[in-house]
Length: 139
Image (cartoon, rainbow, N blue to C red; front, side, top):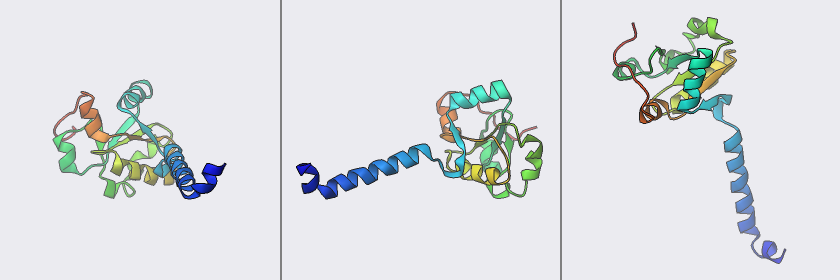
């Protein structure tokens, strides 16, 4: 107890930083669930999850996940109607690093999509895991 009284500033700093770590661990921005590459692969194979690549078209053409659909992040809200039949199905949003797609998950959640996920690490993590990428536009 004497230690706590003499070092109250350090104890308070430790409690606050620990609390912040816990909040960030359990609460992700946008409320979407981040998936690792292996979790995403299982969701694609088991539940036929739809992949939405929210990068710009030139980034998409340079390399994207097989069977993914390109809807740039800036146009996601206005093109959400295209995804209307998928409202209750799993959707995995993908970008280069996972940051843009995490923000885009919040957009779809606000529009009523129930099962929105973010690919943690994005295309970079997918490629690093040795998983296939397709080049060119989707046909």
